[in-house]
Length: 103
Image (cartoon, rainbow, N blue to C red; front, side, top):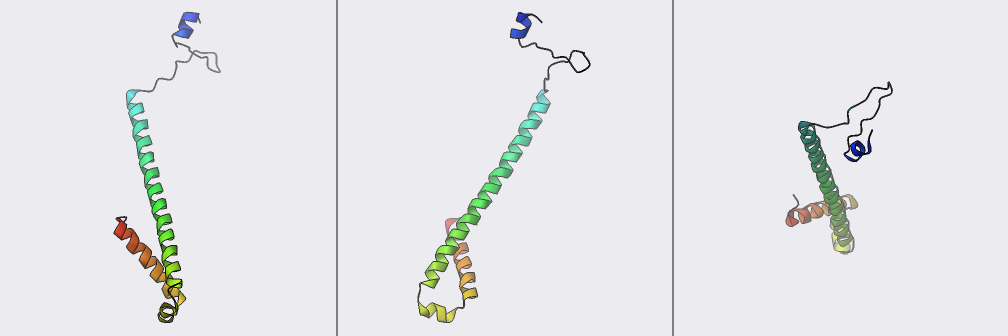
């Protein structure tokens, strides 16, 4: 191979059998298909990230609501048992997400 061919990027490798191989050149259709798949994967990843962030925010809201319920005093504790307090904390977290627009 000449220096001119090498600089022009026309390198052609040899296979294991000693025959020359053509350089890999994807077709425009293949490139379009790869880009489409990549975009679909990005959308799936973005949706997974959104769901995870929402779940983490819901957990934080529920923890804050439960803290508020626990420090509310004996009046609230006499009306609700611990299981009911936990359910109320999740209900409050869901209400906060809804008010925020994260249905």
